[in-house]
Image (tube, rainbow over all chains, first blue to last red; front, top):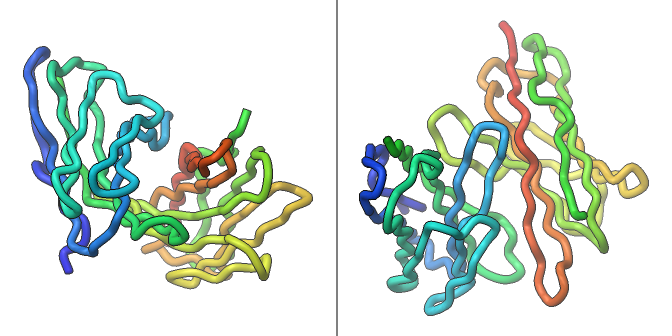
Length: 113
Length: 115
């Protein structure tokens, strides 16, 4: 199993550009998450999907949209990137209710100029 | 407000010495408690968790943690540190938030094990 994979690994954007961060898991997990990690701020939840077909806002959803394309894939879209969105983005998944361990991808480093 | 704190930004320990990385929390109800580790340029990896039962939890790589309800703490420990344990450690707490359970994360503690 590859676990949780994320693409791209690194991206540079100009302010106002758009992009989609891709995440896929091959563990048949129901729940998937997008976090951002910033120095001194820890991990903050952007959006999550408790199961296929559902998405919900997390702590910092503004400026982002998500799509749970199918059970495997959960993408994060920045419609108009801002420098404040410079961060490291992590996707995670877990089997579902009752199983609490999350499995993380390797991260996407995003720099918005 | 519900919160989780890792009071030390950085912990330094000599190889072979015991290590402790601290975590305290303030949440309502019975929490689920977690430790994750992040090596440089990698995603977080699960180390151990406390849900219920024995207060002493053993996890990966020789780590353990003790749930202390009276002190609302869940400190991570290892009897003998290795240089390869150098990483960023995150404590997380899941608590009851109305009809849901919400997960909150500490800010992380950087552990440096010196040879």
